[in-house]
Length: 423
Image (cartoon, rainbow, N blue to C red; front, top):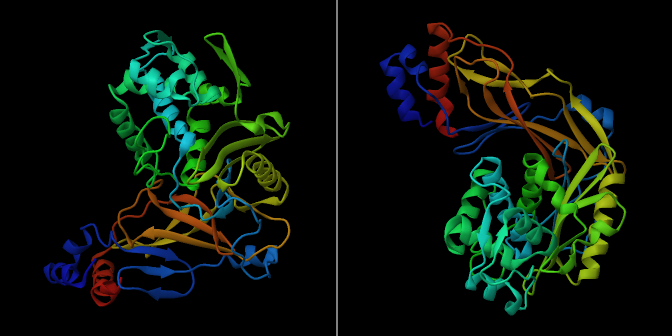
């Protein structure tokens, strides 16, 4: 919050000032050592005891695993630990990987009751010509003007990568592919994907249609978490429609490595890509790779990355369930800070060899205005392994803190008047 607003508030009275929502725009990270930028206060905290116990002494590395993929992102499903990150936010054409978002829109509609798996959709001439047998692209060979149950269309899209199935669904749900693509982008934003933009339901080349491997991996994780009743389709080995049997195009499913999804894609511009998932024991990984030179390299690289992710990391608990992680500074409170905790234990996977220094920072918009109630969302615990942001865990107030006495609010107001403008 700027100094002039605090000057006005302070002159009007410390009590009145403390009652206003203050410094909402100032992002703060809690710990030891303080540096200020014009609008951002950053306090960096190294969790010293944990870092010493882990004996991280080697220099930071940009990447622990060398992959032939141009872009790569892999996460652990349980902890959210980022295990691999290589140019994860580069915009790429999605190709058939866009069908993951197509299915998310469909799954969401069925889960909410707007659609039923028994609903039937008409195969239009546009769907037949653009994505069906005449198109020369991947198809489920849907017959022109036939009606197909939604569950069959879903299997056609997931198992056979059917472009005609995508267009039939898009037209049936939204009237046109263009309208459906807008729904796809809106759903992407709703689930936290900020960079992906969709122009059609199939992933066929279109200007302005882009995704990132980070968002593709997070989309796959979202589908697995939110729609377990539908996720099983991604492991289906084959599907027959119109008396034509086609095998699932995902090469990982035949490797006996615990793979059960999800999708492959190819464009001349971005090369061969894949979004895959493997489950072994209690662990599950999701990976997205793009920019490989051939289907063979794609299959080999995806297997290597997933094998490495399963074998090269140890799980460590940073904080136990209910344990206080740190505190956030309060404005106008009975205390100067409020204790923070996560919703359960905080664990992370760290490399078995070549371990980098572990750094944790509590990041929040602050200071937080009193009063605060237990369970109020406050910020996040961000953990870096080396120079890779490996995990981000939401933090919540661990206690109730009331509004403080007049002199405390006055002191907080003076502090803001003097240094608040630096943020």
